[in-house]
Length: 175
Image 1 (tube, rainbow, N blue to C red):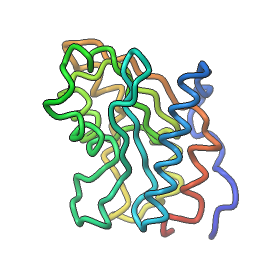
Image 2 (image 1 turned 135 degrees about the vertical axis):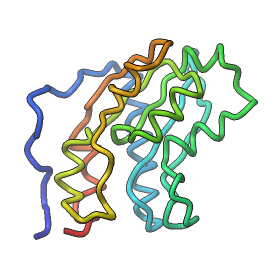
Image 3 (image 1 turned 120 degrees about the horizontal axis):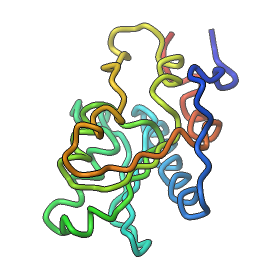
Image 4 (image 1 turned 180 degrees about the vertical axis):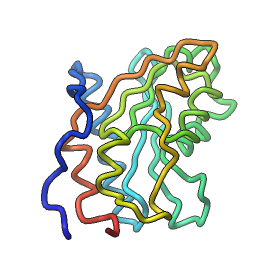
């Protein structure tokens, strides 16, 4: 079965309302998800922006290209921050992700000290696209659960821009 539109919302939560800055950078992350897909990777992208609006990192999922199962967009973006961006700056930075961060990426966000996350399509909706194939399944733990266990606050906004964030997934996953 080929999906031609997004599945209905699987959760009762309404999509988050975003301000103009959040919309701009989330759309940039979604653009990176399209790049990932065009290169044969899973369609996920991420952008990290400082409190001053300066771009700190941008990345896409490159697991197929590299063969590295940890090459998720958010983790790749966090790796770019490395020692060049201070933890004080990251505490006030926002990571924009085209999809809800998985457990691994939520852990990388936690360890980096990033203080805020805005994501597009949520994990529950992504599971509809991915289906039940074992190699496409994820750990069913929300990034919010990981962030809630953090000793420092991590603000989390999403899902948002669901139609746009979901578009790169249409027809991508094997059913």
